[in-house]
Length: 418
Ligand code: AMP
Ligand code: MG
Image (cartoon, rainbow, N blue to C red):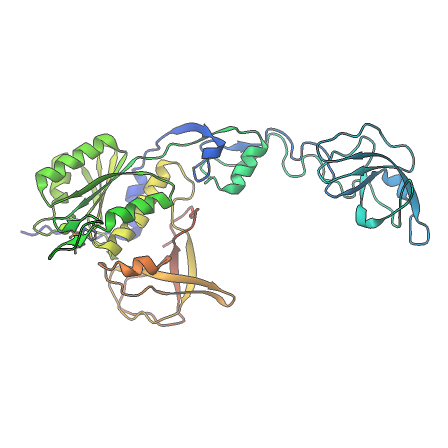
């Protein structure tokens, strides 16, 4: 008798997987390796930024009081007594009507309290004249204006992007504590599968899911360990799954997870005594997506259908992997956009449609990326987003505002809003 599976809502399925995630722990790495990793320590200001009062312009440091009363008719003259660039300290302090020529980034000399920009002066034999009074602290970048010593600037769990790298470098983090990366295994199952370099023969297709998932992981900055392809054979697949579980933190399989005669993943979970969190989700494509835990290790059983496989990875594997790294933002970034094309097909399940998202001056639009059955591969290639349409009886017309999940973004959202 065919096994009956009870579909659960996508949000429920996501919650079930997220609830079971265990953090992987952290490691210390060189700053040069840190781009794309998840911070496992907060960034605390180790000193004020800037660390000293400095000049934001090329110009002259003066005592503001000496400029009192300056105007177009009453230009006030200054004598230049020293000259410093960034990285240099003034050797002298200022007496009345004296100035030090100062370049951007140089520390403000001891008793100076304003900077006159070069453009605001007229040169003389011994210095310059100016035509406006300056007030105390005018044109000065004050010590600590950007960050104060001891302040927590970025929290643990944040994605390290180029700006984060700049801040880490500012405080001398030559090494930084980041989340360990999970080791992710990929196994493609299906007797019909050929490797990329193989010629097509009748009845066979090339394995596109394996390389696709490796790239989805690479997009997250994660490496993968390929277990290649296996024919639909219960014993052989069980043996490889067992081996992969010894060698990886997470195993992603594709294919063989449905109720067909050669779908062996359900039997493998049973042999492993794995805890199946769900095996039917109220979504299209990918309703057969299964997630199980063997001890504490996640097994993602993704459908062999390329669009379903792609979507299953982004919806379930991605947030789990990010949560293992204690990321604060594990979900795909959410946006709203206006449908640029009718999507008439109604379905009782939530639809995830590979789509092209475009941001225009008039607002964001999104349209399906072409042939959109669960077995489609061309629309995954064209798409840069996923339209999410709630299950129901109606279709959607051009101009309707719809929910969109964005792909290709470095950082996601902290909450699942759909
Ligand atoms: P399955 O999930 O095993 O029932 O497979 C569903 C569909 O996806 C079938 O048409 C398979 O031939 C196809 N398929 C399975 N695995 C792959 C793969 N690795 N790459 C591309 N297509 C696949
Ligand atoms: Mg199959």
